[in-house]
Image 1 (cartoon, helix red, strand yellow):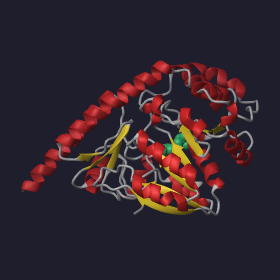
Image 2 (cartoon, protein in one colour; image 1 turned 180 degrees about the vertical axis):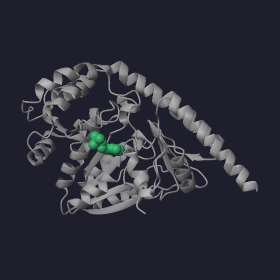
Image 3 (tube, helix red, strand yellow; image 1 turned 180 degrees about the horizontal axis):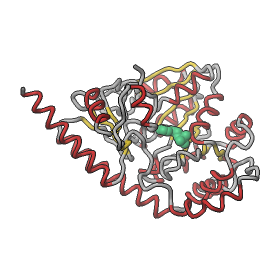
Image 4 (cartoon, helix red, strand yellow; image 1 turned 120 degrees about the vertical axis):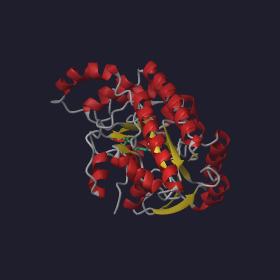
Amino acid sequence: MQLPEHGANPSHVYDRLGVTPPARITDFSENCNPAGPPRAVLELWPELISRLNAYPDPSGEPFLSKVADYHGVAPSSVIAGNGAAELLSLIAERYRGKRALVVHPTFSEYEATLRAKGVEVVRLIASEEEGFKLPVEAILEALPSADVLYLCTPNNPTGIMPERVDLAAILKKAGEAGCEVVLDEAFVDFIDESKSFIPELRDFPHVLIVRSMTKMYAIPGIRLGYAVAHPVVIAEMKAQAPHWNVNGMAAAIGAVCLEQEAYRNAAIRHAREEREKMTAFLKQHGCTVTDSETNFLAFKPEDAGKLYKDMLARGIVLRHSENFHGMDGRWLRIGMKSVVEMEELRAELADWFEQEAVNGKE
Ligand SMILES: Cc1ncc(COP(=O)(O)O)c(C=O)c1O
């Protein structure tokens, strides 16, 4: 039985397992901001209808210029995309017939998009025993033989943000070795913009940064993301992108989202508070928990497979780790949801841990 490759779409999990979903399901397998889209987006909604009969701006305006302002970079350093997913596919095209280093466990789309473009993928695995910390030495050693290195910062599914000094050392060595680096910052918004590498791109023309609007602004259905890199790289990507790849509604929504500073700060605070509560709870119940800095965490219970299935029966969908190399089903991931939903999750988990302890003694 093959479980879905991604979180979200919980009905697929029930279908694949042949389990009838309970009447109420809470999906902790997806990682979007539980606050829902910003109010300003909902207020804009009626006006968007008037844009249905017009072609969008081909470069994704007004979103593109807003992104450039937000990061203090030139618009020529930015490409807008139909979700970060489209940008990852465009980026993979750069490396057709070449060799990529991917550090696992990580987001499965890096390998999927690279393999689809005939890129040879070399895997490095961060060790579970060392808390999935970035294997810096192994990366430095492997860089000269690769054309590109993919890093997810902070990493999905661990939530770990690499140390700045390690990242800087890797990027410097990559530059010397002629290896490009793709940094996927899809979840950096939940830590703090100051953790982004975008301000340092000027010194690193071989680095491409991918950002998603999906997670922070809770707009997965709209499909919007962007990449920031050297203008030459961006021009090459634009040449590969379909014309009008960002729809007009998405471009208008994205521009409004970037103005929402108070909304972002509330989301950062919420993610931190809920992650800390959940981490303490899981450790108290004997689980190992990743040192996440973002809006999800991964944890290792004694029997992840059983916990996963038992929670599904209770209407709770966690993210399995069957397709995360280096985790191989032993870990589960939880996305932080509302205060009430997190409390409900802890209550269900506490009940499960208690029952397991009783069963173990019988
Ligand atoms: C690390 C990471 N990068 C990129 C994406 C794709 O995001 P988008 O919805 O913008 O396509 C995801 C989606 O789950 C993700 O987890």
